[in-house]
Structures are given as structure tokens and as C-alpha cells.
Amino acid sequence: MIKCVGFDLDGTLYDERSYVDSCYDAIAMSINPEEKDDIKAYMHRIRMEKGDQAVFQHVIGHYALDQGALEDFVRIYRTCNAQIQLYPDAEAFLNKPHLWKLALLTNGGVWTQKNKCCLLKLNRFFDEICITGQLPRNHWKPAHEAFEWLCEKMNIHPDECLYVGDQWTNDYEGAISAGLHACLIDRDDRYRGVAARIRSFDELEDYVSRIGE
Image (cartoon, rainbow, N blue to C red; front, top):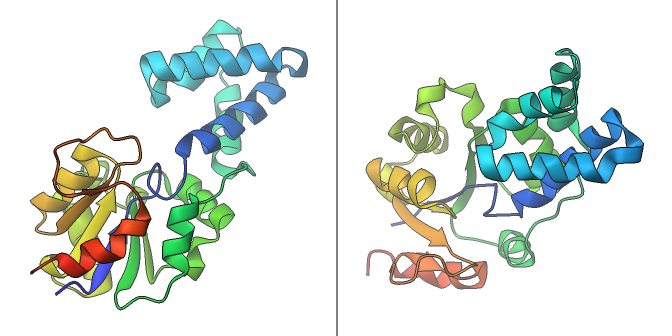
């Protein structure tokens, strides 16, 4: 019997690209307002080519900035008043009364993820918000320790929890490895042929009710 539904945050409940875009806009403005659009485009290109972790150092090198700029970039990213909002189907689901407890398990640094949760006003929906930045780095999703931590916080057995996320490895395989049920939210139809998926949170209540049939 499912007693808890756990959720990923980025890409699952809202479009993570909107947070990144707002942060890059603020960082580009801090470097040179007159070249903001070009700097922002450069940051997005580096993110696509090299990944999130490479962006700030590449910007510092490309624009010949002092290394002290890194601290400013990190501060902006952690505290940005980003223009983000829940996906409409996610907000509709979270606003409904439920028979299960709701929990959040998200990868990322504590300050950044707390900022996102605050901007989205997520405390009103969840019994627990678990940010893996509080754990050793090798215990972040998809490590089983992250999901076990969620279950411990919720005082449930792993097979009493369904975890919902948008990433195959971090969310689906990670949850399964820890003994949870798992379901992919697949808005972009990337996981055709996978039985454990929904295309919208409008389908989630029915999906939960079928577990264990």
C-alpha cells in the first residue's frame, strides 16, 4: 500500500531552464549590461557543450575576469529572484487533497534548492523537503542512500513509497535500487515503451491507485 508519493524537483515540478535562464540573465547583467544578451548566450552554449559545472570558469576566462567573480556568480545563482512557476498539471495535483503523504527529494546545493522551494512556495504542499546537499556527495541521487533518507524522514518502508521524476538514472533507477516504486513523468515523450510512466500529473492519482493490484 502506498503511503507516500515522493517527487523530484527540477524538470519534474517546474521547468529548470527557467531558473537557469533567470540566473544567467542576472549574472550577465552584473558583468556588462550593454553586452548582457551576448554573455547570456555564451553561458547557455557552454552549459550545453560542457555542462553546468563548467560555465562560471569559462565565463571568467573568456571575459578575462578576476577569479573573485566566481564568488559573486555563485551568490547570484543561489539567491536569484528567478521567474519560475510550477507546471500547471503539477500545481493542480499538489493542490488536491490526497490519501498519501507528499515528500520532495531533490539533488543540489542546499541554498540553491531552498531558494527554488521558496520561490515556488513548496512548503505548503510537502510533509518533508529533502535536499541531498545535506548528504555526502556520493549519497546524492541515484545513490540508494538518498532514497533511504527520504523513507527514514517519512517513517515509511521503501515499498510504501512511489517516487516520481523525469530522469531515468537519477530518479527511476535510483528509486528502484532502493526498493521504492518509481514512475517517470514524461512530458516530452522520451521514454516510449516504458510502462512506468505518465505524460501528465493528471494521470498520477490513477497510477498510484493501480499499484499493488
